[in-house]
Amino acid sequence: MSRVVVTGMGVIAPVGQTTHQFFDALVSATSGISPVGPHIVPGAHPFVAGQIAFDSSVYWPPHKAAQLDRATQFALVAAQQAIADASLELDEEASLRAGVYWGTGLGGATTIEESYRSLFATEAGRIRPTSVVMGMNNGAAAHVSIANGLRGPLLNVSTACSSSAAGIGEAFRAIQAGYADVIVAGGSEALITFGNLRAWDAMGALAHADPIDGRRSCKPFALDRTGLVLGEGAGALVLERSDRATRRGARIYAELVGYGNASDAVGISKPDANGQVRAIRAALADAQLAPDAIGYISAHGTATKVGDAVETAAIKEVFGSHAATVCVSSTKAVHGHLMGATGAVELIACLMALGAGIVPPTAHLDRPDPALDLDFVPNEARRIGLRAVMSNSFGFGGMNAVLIARHFDA
Amino acid sequence: MVTLLAIKEVAAKHFGGEPESIDENAPVTELGIDSLGFLEFLFELEDRFGLSIPQDSVAGVKTLGELATVIDGLLAVAHPPAS
Image 1 (cartoon, rainbow over the protein chains, first blue to last red):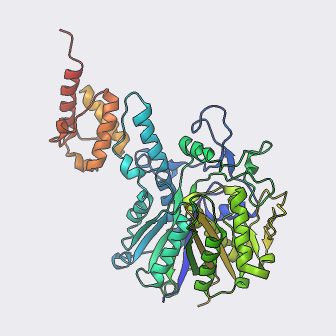
Image 2 (cartoon, rainbow over the protein chains, first blue to last red; image 1 turned 135 degrees about the vertical axis):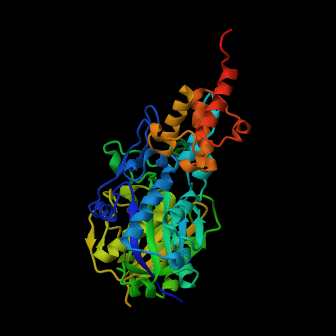
Image 3 (cartoon, each protein chain N blue to C red; image 1 turned 180 degrees about the vertical axis):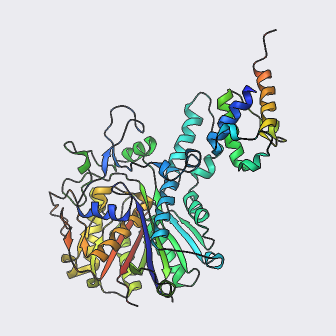
């Protein structure tokens, strides 16, 4: 089987619009959570979210941007960064072996909401003819393919919060098995809309806005955690067959070595440790690594009461005595939960941690929960030599995807 | 003429460029407008003119000049001049 390396990365997130801005913010625990503005939710309301101050005119003239859902815009920006970062140049033949594997939860959520609002809630009752192609779940994947001439296999994965992790894992397998030489893999999400905020709030999943400092509303693994904070953005990675990458002299960030995918098959919203344990074990087996090889786990860590407790139990079960020493952090504290994009964005955080030898902290962790007894790297980044890193992504529906990467040795 | 100028303004906003540089006699495909883009363009024109533009009425339209003629006809029916 071919080995698979990462040769390019791109990110647009509430804490940064380049990989370096992003990682610097994670390391310094600088929050990108802010109150949701009146243009999204009118009147007095409690909502905070990880929002991107995004100026589409930097990338497209207004008439072009108007044809791209916000999530697709994020996808294109992240993919372009990753491709440029990889110095990827594909001739006609190579483009046939270069694919796109993309993850998203809701796809063109902004388009769908605006279209139906126009149809149902305006006197004219009209709907834009581009509603279908801008709103469809695979819109971002299609645009990444079109914009970059990637004509190999294309897969759009939608498994809620594990979408992009599963997409990256499937891309890894596709290259291993010889179906492609290069895959731009990642995910995008832009669902901070009035309807989505209200829907998430209605199910009781959202964090209460911190009354003193809204930027500190997301508190993974803390005793005073109250729920998740929605975020938006995109992450993209160029995955490449290792011999192709070394032959062309590409810079290699890391080797992707393990992917585990397992379903809880228990509940639609309540997570289950058993499914998570099986996904983590599958990833370790795939990587042929023992638990003690993993120095850092980027936790799913959404900051819900149940979610953080179940993930802690799963890590303890798999890691045994090593659970006490492995660094575990959730960067969602500062960027929020990017849903379908979160697996890609957090894998990038992992790879940058691996490269720099710096573990980003779990921010806003001033009051530890005594029932959650792992090393959550509270508030302060830690310098540590890392051999291998793991990224957990667990989605509604009990859909668990786990990725492992390590330094590449030719 | 007023109709054509308004169409060119919407076309420029929708497809880029300047209204005065758009040739009303050029096939719309030369303006970089595909079939879905044309539907979206008609949607905006409906807003602009306060009209419903049935797709049948523009089925044979090849240029923006021809489109202006169709819209003028629809406007005359929708808002007949006072006799």
